[in-house]
Picture (cartoon, rainbow, N blue to C red):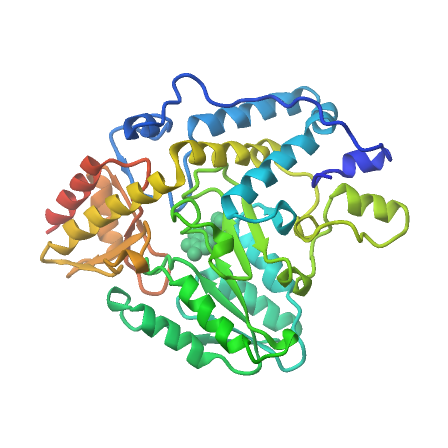
Length: 429
Ligand SMILES: Cc1ncc(COP(=O)(O)O)c(C=O)c1O
């Protein structure tokens, strides 16, 4: 039963037969077989090269259409649209997310953002007396703050470690050794970020997970280290099924590289790992709701649904997440990954050849994704972004104590735009 199955359960309805949902799928002009067709799906302000999709996505045409179709239906008759379409649409979203993640739909919670997923996760993970959580200096505000709240509320010990000194020369061995060397018998959770938005470094998650598995080998089930990941800057970029990365929990927003609706996200957990996570916000899943009405424990609600916060949602966006996965799938996951890394490579090579530019992101594609961070000798990063802006190059500054210029080439960009960005960097005085 869907996350708002509340509506159905409230009336103690028998299992609803989902009505045929509107199908705002591909239109004849949705040709994504070439990159011109893909960029043509976006309504980005013309005359500018937009390199900040990693901040917040522009909706492609199929996502805009789906949102609009659901909005119309909800505006016309919220009760009926919800009752008639909710179960089927929720199933479609979970099915599409499961296909993309390589996971079972029952193991996926729907959230509004990476941050919401991390907050729910780190707030709800079970810790026994004396156990600790290890995170790193490179993680984003959302991880650090969620862990700080957790420590304040429960007295949990949270320790930060450093994985590399210089991002541009970071290596897989250095990162894995730093993690393994930091693990103590009391370490229960490892809180990591797949692609650091501070530097563009991509953690070799598979190698990390393998090394952690070796450490776990001799440990009791309840003492094993579980790997929790903020995966947002790899989600919709990397050509890998998330469930194969070897981590235990993975949170991502849908509204960055995947070009999903703004205000969507997923939190995935491995089946056994979910036992360690308790929900914070009551789900509106019909199974839990019905159990409440009947005065019994919600034993048949799967973990993903249990962890999906209830309350009604901005359903027009939540349901249009299925269309974002479909759009991504039509372009092709490996094509997206190849295109993104080719554009990032072009940018890195062009920038690295400039005398005043210091590239901070590794050139090695095993240790980088789409994000590219750099600094310019003698110029403050904010000033660089301002000057790029004046040239129609939309970039950003890393929101961290150390500030770099950050660009995220993606499927909305062209090689010509990368040349423009490199040209604008070259002309900085
Ligand atoms: C590493 C990282 N995680 C999470 C976020 C926030 O994502 P969301 O809006 O999905 O919470 C950002 C930046 O916006 C980020 O850089």
